[in-house]
Image (tube, rainbow, N blue to C red; front, side, top):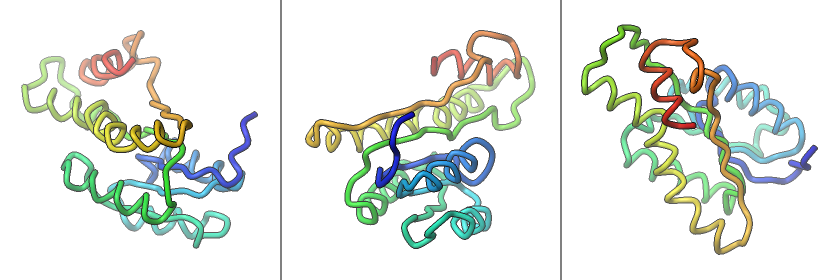
Length: 161
């Protein structure tokens, strides 16, 4: 098991589900976190439940907007000093259940599940290269290879894989 004590980690999709659970676990192992999500109230609740809440930062915003991604990275680096690990949990099917997606729906799914992570990586990886260390973790789904979700969700997770 890796040692996460003192590691500086950015987690997207932290306001619920797997992102929430990973935040609790990694903070419990001594990591310092920047937890990102859209739901400020849930992020406040998460931060209050983390050990040593002052060692962690929450960031609320919709990362579909590239300016918001830039703000997250700027504030996250400012708080942590540098980011050593990025855990990309953000994603989902956005409730698009129909078998025929519109151009806009497919574009949204791509941005949320792949584009945001790619932009975060673009902004973080140069620092990781400079420091000669760093990890990027992209959370996928069995839906990438099995038809377990909606057509849009299965398609975008296959693209991520």
